[in-house]
Length: 117
Length: 113
Image (cartoon, rainbow over all chains, first blue to last red; front, side):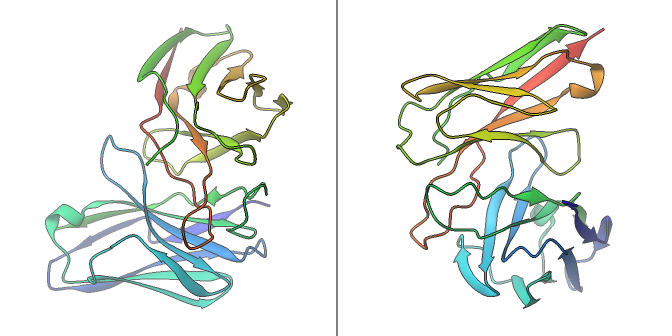
């Protein structure tokens, strides 16, 4: 089973709202990722958690706040977003997340389509 | 930044083999080549990966040149459902020690009936 689930599938929020995106995997993976994808563009890395600790933050604005409550769950808390933050938000997981020379396949969820009004 | 170069688009007739090229001339000896595809508005789907040897699975074959500077993904009998953006990715080490996937622009493959 290589399933990563994301909820909700779609989310519409105003600029003053607070919302959260959720991601879950039960593959025993210890690395989890958030990506953002704008229309007709490739996915862009936002955050990486490795063994429940934040290891990469790609200079993401503080209105995006990640959280990894345990090794199976990854949240992305959203606050005071802008319309330009509308995008597909993708979660992924992999076994280890680190180590060159190691095959560490990332598996992606279906994404959450976010619209900020 | 992505370490790969792919053609922006390709067409393939249904039932024929689709050969998608990728250049990765600066690849290091222990960096893997990964292929993913993304069908419209879905999450990227893992296809195959390789280091030095050619690889085959139920979805595709991966041919890596001996000098490892380029590779080709082969879909042996393309169907309309294979229409997607195909990403060739070389996993490189981030200063943190992690090796997340960094996506380039990919190749938009259109399978035509």
